[in-house]
Amino acid sequence: MTTKYILELCDTSGEHKPIVRLESQTPFMAVNIGDRFDDVGWERLDDVGILYSIEKPKRYTVHSIKHLVFPNSGGLAVKYCLNLEPYSGPSSPVWGND
Image 1 (cartoon, rainbow, N blue to C red):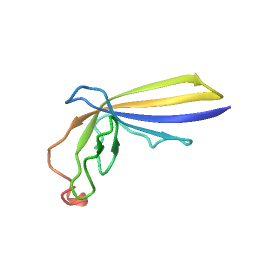
Image 2: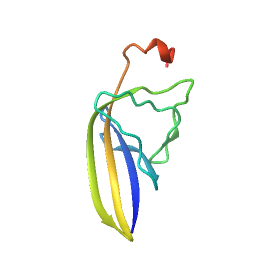
Image 3: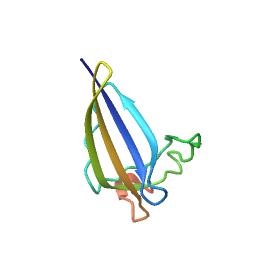
């Protein structure tokens, strides 16, 4: 039996639908509500392409998280859905102006 990990990111300021979907054969890092989660070059869904970069990121914080576990062909799918809110507050001096 195999496990597929899926990370879906939703921008709550727009249509509140997934803007990015990432898949992995290994678990994603732990994420908590309130964490910063910045778009530094994600390939967006709906054929929008890449909108941001490390030099010009779109900054978010995690508003809420939904976890789903369900059977799929040959094993399980573990899906993490992160609801992201745009963030424009101060940046940590450790990260510079990121």
